[in-house]
Image (cartoon, rainbow, N blue to C red; front, side, top):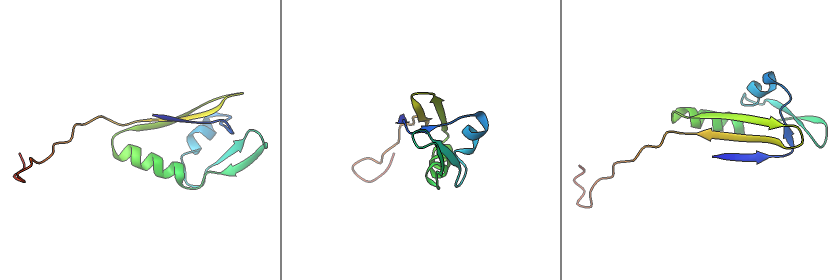
Length: 86
């Protein structure tokens, strides 16, 4: 699963690692300014990692950034209709 963000450009490996930190800052490509990311990406990382997944960002000049994540696929066991479980 992934989300494209054309306005954000990650300029180096250090910034790439920092983007998922609380209140990390990134450069907005169009405005040539730095903005904080708040807690959103931090919460995303915590949720994805809590489910055994991985989250990362890839950037390319002229394209912006793509934030992607994977989580393991697990089939949930549901109780039967009689309410007795399995």
